[in-house]
Image (cartoon, rainbow, N blue to C red; front, side, top):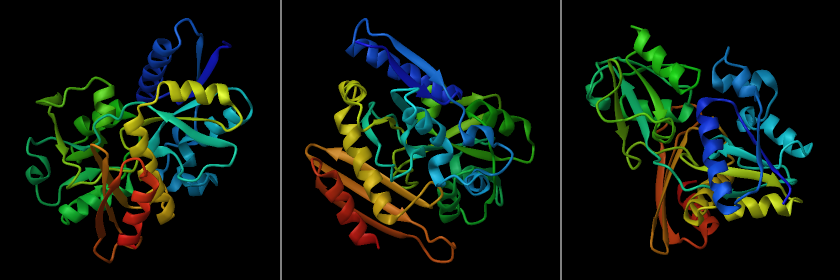
Length: 308
């Protein structure tokens, strides 16, 4: 077989996810050469403005701030397979691209890192919490309206360091999946003076695709698609399809404040969602639905019908 070229962002987390992909490919295709190509995306380059403003300032379509350059490399045949954090991928792809596989999902919870060991309830009144995610901002204010929220950029280690060193910050928000993949232990102190508290996903709903490493290939490249399918975790892919379809129906993008949580129980798929209005004036809309796991798009459509 010809070498398989995978494309990835260059952050520590992205490289860890690329390594996971390479290990899975090595197991599925012993002896096949896999070449890693690191590509810097708009979102990695523009750390001078809040994440919610990057797309606007760069003229990139919403979530494309973390995928545009990888898709350009795919289109130019510079790579065969792009490795993504699925929560960063646009819900509608150009017709020449497709999501053709996914690794087994990691924990989906959001984690509050704070200087007090007590989770959200342990934060002082009017505590300052940093997050670049509009969804996390709205979820936090939904649970703790008194909090003061500020933006933060940087990779996982950088954000943890900023929390530890900045006396004005009381907490930051990160995904459990990223912390686990980078080897952080969530029990006790994550770093000196920094405690981790995971928020249960039925209370603090995660982003669609959170915790899933997915693969994007060209629709005309059967070889790369077959490689992606060979290392795909079928149940995680079902969840990925359902959650992305719900966002597509909502016409929701990277900065739309919406949380989605799905669970599998036998041949059933349960989904719940919390959708905040864009202006922040009305209470969020919430709904839940359960259907057949073999029909993830139908489950998403039924949930959408309940929540619109």
